[in-house]
Length: 316
Length: 116
Image (tube, rainbow over all chains, first blue to last red; front, side):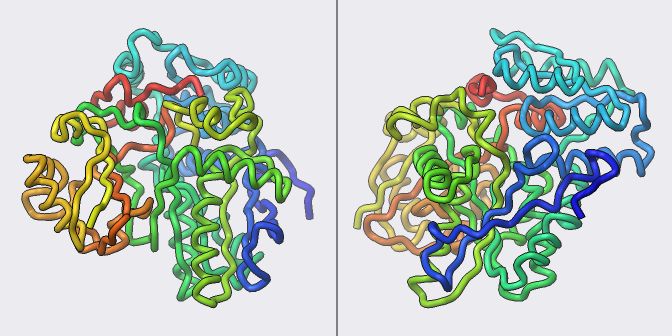
């Protein structure tokens, strides 16, 4: 049944697609879960819907209220769509140098944007977000990094879909950001499949991104529980770009760069299984399509050019 | 036995500005002890007084997180690459959100890339 009463009901139940050309052998198969087939084109529609519904159930928000979220990424876009359909006002705080596409997408879905000065860098933006929150105690921040509904969305939907479509699943590979996908899917699959391996692919960015002044300024999301994972890989920009291009060239799937990082880890475990003579069904998540990243220029030219284009950027 | 160790920007004050240094050891613990002899104080920034890896430090052996390979007991081999990185959240403005909620400042460079 592919008929839905409204757009929110059309979230999830995404296709799981086999990759016969990238799979190492008929016994070791790769499967891509296409989360770009969600209403706003990313996996973040799942947690956005669950976080808002959960906040409604808990009485934290009611239609007409204002949600404040300092993000211009996929979560912001997903929240903007859900907020529009459920009758909330969404205010996004972001530095004024975010891309024009992101700003246009958010405005199109009806979000309001408060810019912080680019010259003040992140300190100004953080200060502004904190100030806005303090001035508006009735505004609600959902904070996807600490919000249980984020991983619950995947425990209740993404996980069961994977098991239903691939009962022989042996490995699940996804990206590690808020950690919501891996915590939710991982907990669900571990409860259902004895030997399942839950594998994290973490993007390793250019040096600028790690330019903290002090180790103590580091951050681990509140949702993260290392015991859910079996292994965790760090994937550099070059490998992520290479795999992203390979996926569209070999299997026809046009995805964003975080998918490339995830595929890199998925291929590593798939080839390990083949070398060890084990059969495996490796499912990995495609968080979004490549459309929003075309302006980086990283889909064409040499790998070195692409790496330079993405240097200092958070591409996943 | 030579192992290449990649040093993050914030710890390069210990390595005279070197991005990568050579070390030796059968385990990560051995390697860090070896490095500390050459780059005094480095080990203390990675390991807590209780003897575990610092919460906000991630160490990878050939791109795999050592916390899933035995942590400080992780076995090393000649030719391995060890990468040390501070823990940061994914997503530029997610990082911003986290910092705002925690009331913690971030460095300018930590968010250098919102234009993506």
